[in-house]
Image (tube, rainbow, N blue to C red; front, side, top):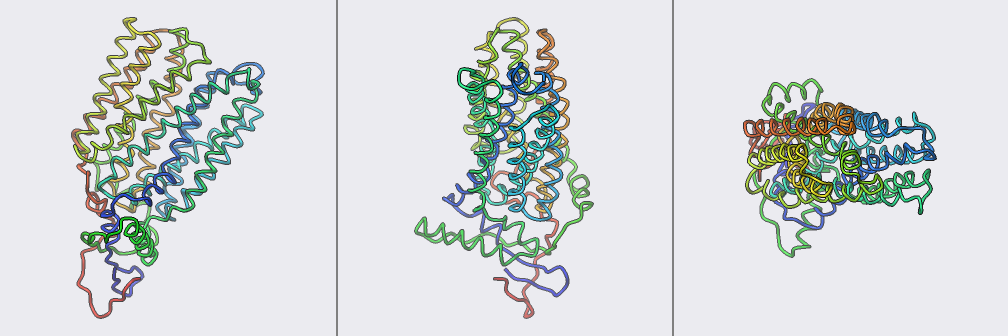
Length: 496
């Protein structure tokens, strides 16, 4: 790595991206996955617990004068609104101040808000801290996805990103089973069980925080933001650790990149880059996020009401059905993830979106014709979501890798916020009404809306998706700070 010039902005040539991308899988990468990826388990736990305990919260003696519709409608919408706001706020800070500072702060926000939710004594308190819980989780999406993609080698980036995002459903499965336990009044009083479910989220978050303290800052972010020496030091330590682990030297890195270092990047430059330089990629990002948000809201915000209202499943048993559905969701990215790195992004993204949408249309038709019971309906949802989960996870992968490094966290935040606001705020309000009405046609309409938008997003992916498999992030989208390489001269000084 070398530096040239004496201006305010130094020009440096670095092999850091190539050195990170050529690393074989190691214990260090597992530490990254565990330290950063497990937050999705918390998100899944949060969302599922609230959905499953809504009926208990609305009962007399719960400690809160709240209705089922307020929990799954307004409460869910506020959580998502908080997530959108948190993603934008913390996404901007992440690109400005670094990945590590923000993924520690956002987790702390989540922990504090979840603890306060467990202590809710009134409806307004519950709603307020549902918003702030979402605020922390939204910030996590921006900080974590950008850090993961910048630390994981290009060969594994697709499958790792998908599996990590898919781990949301491990939390969902745990939340569903936990709610069954919490709703058992033979074990916990009505006003205690639901509080303990939120308290468990705090305990898990504290464990993750302890692990996360050892995850380093992104060297890619550091060398652009005038921290070349620190970036080189982190990568060198990882290389030594992996060489000791494998007992052999690492292969030589690939090509170097020359960039002009800056402390900050103007917001106007970031916005101009997203929409003027990459308009087709911007359309792709919007489409993927809106499609998956509406499909998931069409199913997940109504599954409990459908099972109870149409199939006479008791409210205390819906958690078992959701746990099975959540398992299907997790298996999708786990089984299909590798194909996004081998078969390719475009084929797999468009395929999973279109297929899941068509399967949901088919499920809606079976339901409308009266061919399903609680078990077969859950089985249909599992098949739909096996493919939809891989597609939804690929939305986060897509927007985190197809825009320049300096815009990555804010790009994730922006598309997440816009897409999720469209599907995640309006979704609970619309779908909870449709699926809880007790009218078959209303539920079919909810499914059809989600299915149609998912298919439409798949078509957009066929047209605009980027073949990013196996490529360095810098090759997919050149950094805004990139400059043509210059021959080294006598005035150059080495960067350690």
